[in-house]
Image 1 (tube, rainbow, N blue to C red):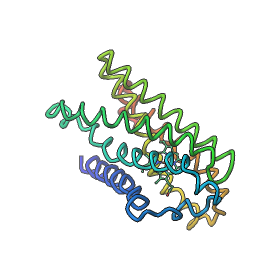
Image 2 (cartoon, protein in one colour; image 1 turned 90 degrees about the vertical axis):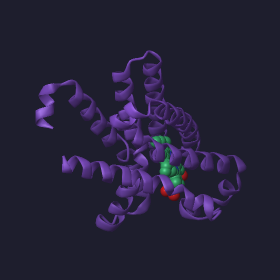
Image 3 (cartoon, rainbow, N blue to C red; image 1 turned 30 degrees about the horizontal axis):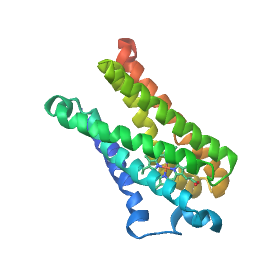
Image 4 (cartoon, rainbow, N blue to C red; image 1 turned 30 degrees about the vertical axis):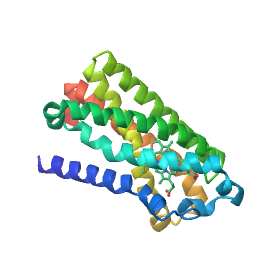
Length: 211
Ligand code: HEM
């Protein structure tokens, strides 16, 4: 029980810290800072790219900040209306952030491999939110929860990316672009596998004893 609580605190802690990270870009008007420093000048000057970038990070941050709280069954039972309101904001945030994320992925650091990784992530993020929404419209609570687990595991790519990056630099001493190409996939594919294990564990009582 203590381990479960600790894992929950770590999970929520990472979601909150990385969910607030876009504020760094928003508050200081860091036009040319962070990852943007690595972009060509023409891209930085493009209003379209900027609008997409800020839409992506703002709504991605909101999705990450809100999503974890929705998995507490206690909270859901007690405050069903709040769950619905937060859920609606979450769905809008995911759709906006994923569409914007898909478009800025065209210009991702590391070239076509990173672009494909982030585009794949954006498409899976959209697909899983669509499936979760459809399940709740059909009043299928179990499937709704399963798809939301997969969807939030993908949102959590924002966290895992920012864990893999320093690891690749500090522990493995990889060059940044090569590491980034690998991490554009590594930040979400394993998350999806973990989400699938969680979903199956709920379905198969046998696995519950193993995992
Ligand atoms: C799950 C779907 C997501 C996709 C497809 C995605 C895609 C991308 C892409 C393509 C970039 C630009 C990378 C580059 O130009 O090299 C980026 C950057 C960024 N994303 Fe996301 N992202 C996702 C989720 C999130 C979430 C949930 C957040 C919330 C914190 C977030 C926050 C950021 C930030 C702050 C940057 C700027 C780069 C940095 O400073 O690290 N993203 N994302």
